Length: 360
Image (cartoon, rainbow, N blue to C red; front, side):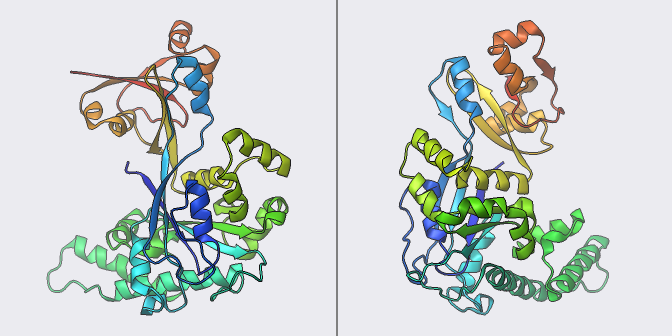
């Protein structure tokens, strides 16, 4: 699959650019105390933390580790009325359309030195953002034209889907709540904003991080979002972590009583929200993680490495990560009978170590 892209969205001055810079460990975005410091979106790739790769690298004796990547897109701050062109309006909304997943950054910290440009509180801010997305989708749906005359059954079905979605949007309901695959397909064709999956990053003060992480369920209920889609994060702490080595990061997180960095938690929630998983490859050249959809077959996984692998697929040699570690690599799992031979239709499981056999 193409790389995962996450749009960082929120009102002005909620900490989007600070968080973006910290996630990428670079100063790519201007983080300033005034609205619209970001005008054009900033794009950058971040690696997805995966401790399994270091273990595999030691076993196969390689120093080359390639983690899965996520593209973060820092999008200009939104204001009420964006769907009618306020602020950066349609430009802002067009940038969101290009992403796979919307990450709402909501401000939940008190700092009199940082302006509140249109931001009031986390719940109200989320309602403002969603309303703008709904208004933009309503405009798109209202532009659609009903089929005329002897329209095909497919055209009539498509129009029924459009009417159903328009009814939902008019009632303020997000289209991503729809389960019907045919309607989802039409929503995707129209690139509707509220059809995109979403997650929430609640940006809290550094002194409140641990306490609010422990209250995640309560905070999710207050915001009216799913707990599994909420990440409590401190952009300020992430910024400090980005300046440290991995070892120093672990020490700092341990001192704070926080097990994982915000990036690790954001990446995990993004994967879960989009129903993604990783399979692993390990050899003398490299240890690497590859991203696939849950339910992907062996031949589809092979195609992620190279299209030729899918076209010339013979079989996949598959072993669980745990067995690969326990038996000390490829030779050990072969001798112990833990390695399986799987065909093209085998459904891949998260964390499996794979070697694809392909024809010439």
